[in-house]
Length: 124
Image 1 (cartoon, helix red, strand yellow):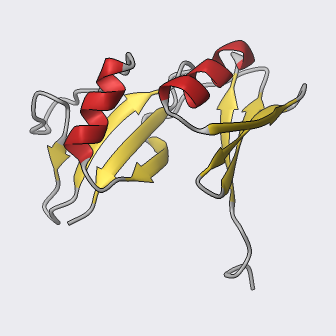
Image 2 (cartoon, rainbow, N blue to C red):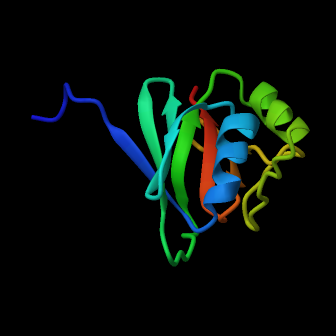
């Protein structure tokens, strides 16, 4: 039933003033609008609503990610924009923070200003 409909993604924030600079200038998403409820971006045709919340406990897992064609290039570009990639114990990650999964997918994780875990993945 919802297959042909466009999906809307949601990310919570306690820091709406930090949202626009990070998602627009650092990640490169197109700003669409902002009001007292959310800051909205166009993520390549998907609406991303970064929703204002009074309290937030960031989860330890990825809540939003991007499929990329060249993870090393993307990771380097994001690092040059100030993004720090997470290093997790027990996982073999390279100097950029990229983990190569058993399936061959390559993943790197980073956090937004609220501590939400985001990722970039290059699938093999």
